[in-house]
Length: 237
Image 1 (cartoon, rainbow, N blue to C red):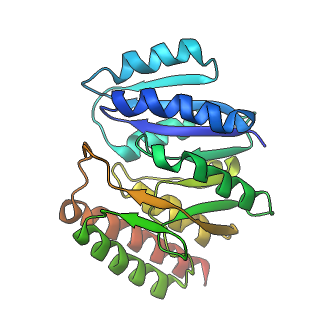
Image 2: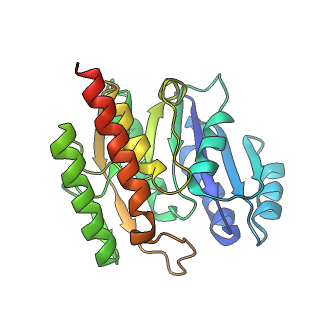
């Protein structure tokens, strides 16, 4: 099982220097490559990444210029994945506490699934200091897409996913911001891929450098939902 890790990084110098050694220590035999997408960071993310790349030969940097955006960064990361890789694991740069949980995704994938979601909302999933407004928005959004689209998965929007590489070749993801996490959760299910879930944790970072704003991003997430509804409606004809 050869896995390409795709990790967007915007001003993540501190997390990056911890995450890469942790991944290599815990998952060395599975790592085919680690792709860090430096999303026009203003700190030393680029310098830290390039230093790590000298030590860890399977690490490669993708350095982006503005405009920034998680969706843009992830799409560029997916494009950089080697054709020799079998699987793609997408995760945030601050998922330090989740490194050991990656083996759960791998074990589940090896049971014959096309992909595995790291779920915070199934039994044994865990939320620590998760902002209340984000949780409410998340559950309302999932109630909408699950009821309208008939999707059973409970955590489609977490950027903690292990998919066969072909999924990123067969589906065009369009979102420029955090809504890409909804796209990568919803669209593969609608395309007929067999996607499982395993429990993972979400822990509030001590210094939150993300610019996730619930109300600001609501239109982007709704756009993904409407695109998915249109896709299902047309495919069911």
